[in-house]
Image (cartoon, rainbow, N blue to C red; front, side, top):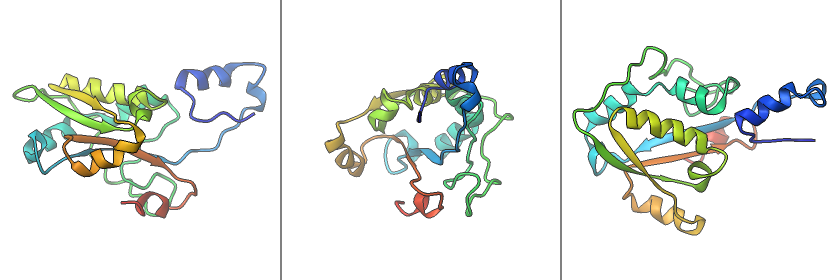
Length: 178
């Protein structure tokens, strides 16, 4: 049997189930998830606010809480283990201390249903909770598939949560679409 894209609690259950644990094996997945800011309009046009957000988010803790102990934070667009990965681009981590913004702000976040209600919803929830802790209330904007590209191109949302999974372990799988 093959299982893919499991919730962390389901993966832990399989790892400890005596009926399947002995034959359990895994292959690392290569996935990148990005929270991009709209720097052309709205509150995030202010560079100081963007720096404050990035400096207040412990991405390692967010990923660990959402994905369990088996996920690795990439720290760059290219995941660890591939040529082109740069592990020295760390911007967040255990030294981060969340600091509230001077004023609360509300931001809209464009995302695919995978993040709003699908298998990556735990990651989105953890990220939005961390944003809420520093005074940012993020609203989900998850249009139907046929409307998503038009919404992205319109650029009216403040943030964009998106990602991709490489079909082949090559850095080009991650960079080509940019």
